[in-house]
Image: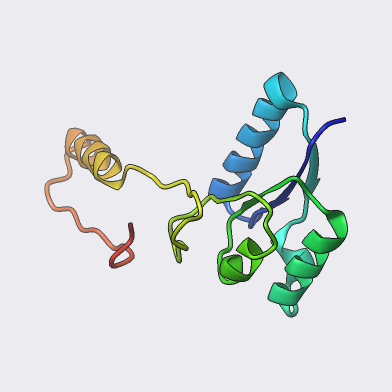
Length: 128
C-alpha cells in the first residue's frame, strides 16, 4: 500500500507551484505516494484548527508544509513533516531553504552583464 503524504502549499505563488511540480515529478518517477493536496484557500478561515483537524482525519504518513504558523502544534501529532520555507522555522523540523548568497551573486552577475551599475536589494531581515 502506498504511503499518504499531505501537502499544503500556497499554490497561488510561483515558488509553491514549482515545488508542487517537483514533488509530483519525483512521485511519478520514484515514490508513488498517495498525495493529498490542499491549497491554502481551502483552509483560509481559522487555518490552524482546520489544518490540524484535516490532518487528523486524513491520517497521512507524512506532511510537506509551506506555512508554519501552527507547525509546533502539528509536530505534536507525531507525523513526520518537512517545511518548504525557512520563514518561521521551528527547531527540530527539517526545512528547505535557498542558497541566498549564491542567488545574490548570480543576480549581480546577470544585471552587471546587462549594463546595470547601480543595484539595490530589498529582503527579509534575519532570514536563515
